[in-house]
Length: 81
Image (cartoon, rainbow, N blue to C red; front, side, top):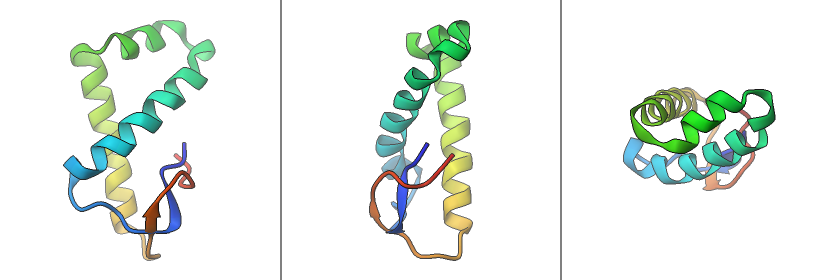
C-alpha cells in the first residue's frame, strides 16, 4: 500500500495522518478480500476489531515514516506497506 511519495511531508500527529491512511487502508483491504474473506468481512463491518487493527497498523506506519531520514513533501500514494 502506498501512502506518501518521496517528497511529501508527513502530517504532524496521528490524527492528521489518520484520514489519508484510512482511505488507503480500506482500498488495500478490498484489493485483498479474496485472500481471506472472513478477515475482510470483520474489517469492513467496523467495530472494535476493525478499529484495533486499523489503529495498530496506522501507528506502525506513522512511526516508520517519522523515523525515515528522507524528507517527504506531499501526500500521495507511493509508500509501500
